Length: 616
Image 1 (cartoon, one colour):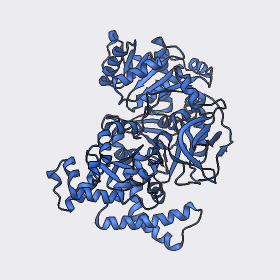
Image 2: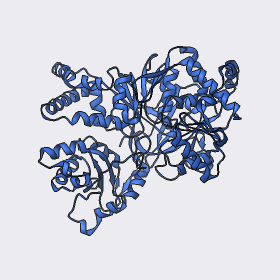
Image 3: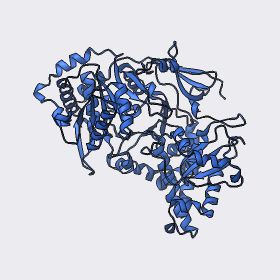
Image 4: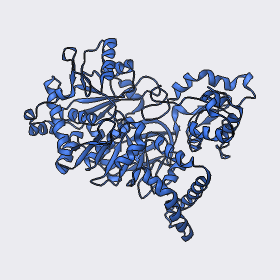
């Protein structure tokens, strides 16, 4: 382990309000493209300039006042990503009300919990289904709410208003009065309350102030090479702070924010929007990587050769050297045959990716770097607005999340936990001062719950989530994420979760990549059409092949006690909808372990002594 326990970026950043950022951007960029959304399922766009964005947001702010809302009130947004989501957010900023984003996939009871805890008095919804969900939540939790729907039908007697009806007439908008009012905002006022995804326990309302978000925008703006006129495809949930802060940053810097049809259509939408900067969680990079590595025949040999050449080229570049003449020559051919196709697949104009939300496999990061698509991996949490660290374009350190952003300190506690101090650290948990005190000490250090180390050159390396560490029955500590990330690079693996806490050995729950598996099975003479997924996974030849692929992919550089002994094959993917993934694609380990408890128990039963691959 590296010996450093502290690193700081002492560059200061100013404090201000997010409302100020929005107004500054409109004044600077006026008629330039600001928001771009698809029209229905088509590839046609509905565009908003910066000036048009302000006009709609100001009309909403006046409309909110007309509904009786006062500064400091809470307004919830229950919707999938869409242009109206951003316009609602900007309208709340101008009206000086705090927004409460709610993931559109949550159940009525979960929505009711958040609405009740936050004290929200009005909810913006996307459609009739979400209106019905809010009504059910209001009944069950005895809440008095008004609802605004973007697409559904209005019912004023039931307190349901249409989006267009809430927007005031343009003649009623006094922009100068709004500017004067916004200028009176205190940067320490609460801007938004974001509820954690609840991977463990009940969601907590994270209070982020204007200063929290403003300082993070300023800090990231100093280290990321963003240009006026850049465009991005915004597809991560705006209910999560990662995409939202990035959108504030790009809007402020004069970029256009394109909206994906949905998170499931990102691959196609990238080719249409053609972003120059792109933010994502590792799941996207894993899918692209595995699709490339899924090549067969001659193409597979070309991909393998290009990957090896790219690796040698990347090793030199990352070490600050120029590749040798032969490597340069080979790389030019590899780029033409393989890497240029990958760049075209993400729109053809991308300068860099930013990754966050979960650990990124170093192997995948290096592959993208060699393909001319550097991924600037960063780190942060909802409670830190979110960015605390990020790799720099001219100083990529694969396997780390980079140095601290300006005005940020990182310290490693005695037990290995990462502590953060800076202006981006939240005000606290809403209605929960005792929980706030558990994670923020008297000196302002926030305990992240993650385990890590600081490299000699001041970059942070994440080892694992503190609560995810597996302690075997023999008392050995095992970090599951490095092994899981290694396995995600195997083309036969779609998803994987390592288990074994308080058990004799570690094991794996694996969702195979069924498209790859079925193609292999067909080549082996196994009739996949005669099998459903579970039947296919029960085939002895399939089990033997997956056991070899998965357990053999772990490598020889892990300790004996870390090495999983068995795998269970799952026929269904973990999804946001079934509650096993968070909206940012992180696995909910506690939920998965509870759901598959019987299957996990079978790993350790005497009757399973000689069996390696059970099927769920």
